[in-house]
Length: 544
Image (cartoon, rainbow, N blue to C red; front, top):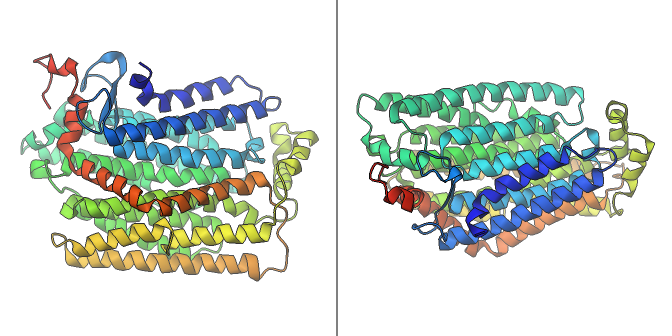
């Protein structure tokens, strides 16, 4: 009985936890809120791992292998709200939880003291992320997008400061505009098809009349613009570097996966609607995604080379990651096959973890005398902190040999983001390059241009970040101040996960290969959602 409701647990757990913590006093019960958040996020991780196992072997409430569903209100698809679990959704749930736990631990060193309700906002962010990955219809994708964006507004502005407020206002404005485009696109799609259920759309796309198809394409294109804004695609990414740089370190770490929500939505809908079963719409938008992906990678690598600070450089590395996966999505949509998409998904996992670790390193590597305590003193009056609160900060962990540990952690992040062996960045890029070379159905010029960009982006990342490393660890005569265990342990944890990702590369590539094949198999997804006795027993319900 419990297993039947496990799919909705990654949404309910952070929702209930976040709402409950709103009743706690920020000053007197901060420690309790932290541990409640840790327990909640750990539970989400355990459930996500179980859902991965279910997605690999087939759910016990689905007739299609690897596809499980949950009917809210017990209304059958496409009439009711449905949550859908497959290999891709399960993978993203695990990745989100793996990034969230280190970010929470890091925040407890002092960042949670910058303003009220940090842990509640964090849990609501997780709720939106998990819901976006699990939802089976486009409108509820919009709902979960808005939940995670609302939480991210509060987290980005957490701690105030002129730069943070200015970047936050830009971030809010551009995302509100994207949300408006989202609604317009959804309205057009519903007007043409009469449904927003993803599986139902996949079934209907080939049957759309010639007269209505341009309107459907226009709706999808407008919807894609909203997703591209959230994915940080060029030329819609002008807001991202400043916003991500201005965010608090643990918030920036979580933002590393927020761009991937936009990438996930584009990958999910493009493969469902415009894959091999899309009829006259097969391959729609593939060339646009390839070109935008390449432009985003180029913009990101130029940003890495021109950036003078680690924060802006880390933000541009996120753009390189997003552009890479967007471009490969376009190639896969153009008939490239699952092999290159498998490499891109493996690369996505490593790049998110490495970018998260890099954001956590920004503050310790740029810390001046006083460290976090000095930073907190600037906001003590605004948020009611007293001397007791500030005195807690120096004892929030053990001193560690800062220079040595920070330099090793930074070097490992650089190796991963630059795509050098033996970390997942190299393995993922190698898999993508091999698949691109092996494909004969793709435009040779675009494929080779993309390969060159992958290689050049790695060299650009290596050069840009090596410059920062030299300035921080070799050229400076000022010793880095103390670093707390609560700050460096999360970074080490993320790097350990990256190492395990390399050691288990074969098993993970098997999983991502199965995921890529499942994304190409549109009929299996649609059948998995509609494989329910409620639909089978009703002649008036739509057949898969």
